[in-house]
Image (cartoon, rainbow over the protein chains, first blue to last red):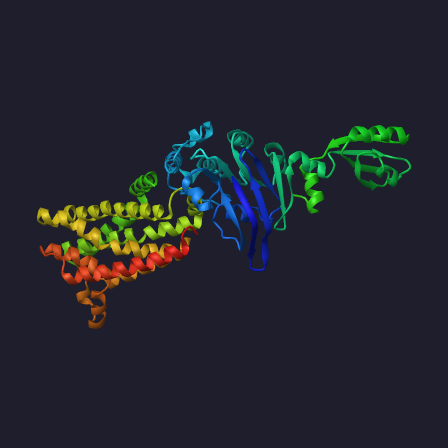
Length: 283
Length: 235
């Protein structure tokens, strides 16, 4: 559906993309995650043919991006797309839908309520909903969304993700929770490179699926490190945090070997901690 | 493409700002010249002002393009199946259609408020001649629209609009200009656009010179617009 090979892009001195390759197959839901300036928007712009890479190539649905867009099988929500102010929402959505071979108008009660209003008076969230309706106006086989839920309230977000459910989607976000909930694959960009790419579960396993926190009277870091399943240990005074890929085995051995282990708590590693451990900074 | 064309035509025709700007202002000027200041003859001033309004309408198609380029709407359109030429064709069609009602309104003001009396055939020919005469300005507007963005395009076009209109004798007849300036004025596009209507007042067809000079300006502006458009398309 989407194929990027060896993309490089510089803006003057700044390297936005430094050799990015990415392949997205049919039915995948891919979250493009990364801090601001990681190259997410540059990557999407190149994938859509809006920007020419310095090196590398992009293909959409097996053809050059501009051709794929002209064929009308790709729906796109851009972060910085303006809307004409003086027109009614209903007319705008209908006009754009009419450009596609398979016009489709988003059945959303909030959008329907806006149909007679002019774009001028809409709130940021309402505009985003209109942009989303434009992205879906051609009943696309592939959806490309850049920060799709910015400005949307909880209901609108839920409705957006419901619409997205049965399609191939590539979306850029800086909300980790969104990638966690709605993607089955996460591509992590940092400094213009793909630093990690895999299923959400695998990404979590990268840093250990589970965190075990405990307090010990006599700290013994090497022994903690040798517990089964553990691949990382963080000690702060009397408390330790273990990252483990097999929490059951770790806990059994912990209780058998450390009589003084207290306050033992476990928690599931979320993408936030994956993110921090891979890029060294928070999102 | 067809749905977008319909959308742009409806949009252009239902925009009240257009009518105020393209018809209201020229009507006021017409009344000022002929009724208040008594500087110009009724029919000639009526044609001048209708041409002036129409010229603005054609030119400011480019202003709308400049605004939409800077608002990012063109980026959104670039990811739809609409071909690049579909946007500009729709914009030109909508904008040029919106010029017609404004011309009719200024002419109606001449007839109803100014007491201008002309043969029926002249009344029918005038809007078409004036409309055709301002076509080159649409191409010039496109050149502006793809050279500058947002507000700076509007300001540059206001200046070009005013200079070309004054030079073309739409505000005051070129016969009152000094000799050298007058020659220059007579080869300017606005003068030749106006002369189509002025001659029609006397029942005369456009001269070969008019048609030739207008065609030359049109060709130049189309080349200019096409060049600017290709270097900026979708950005």
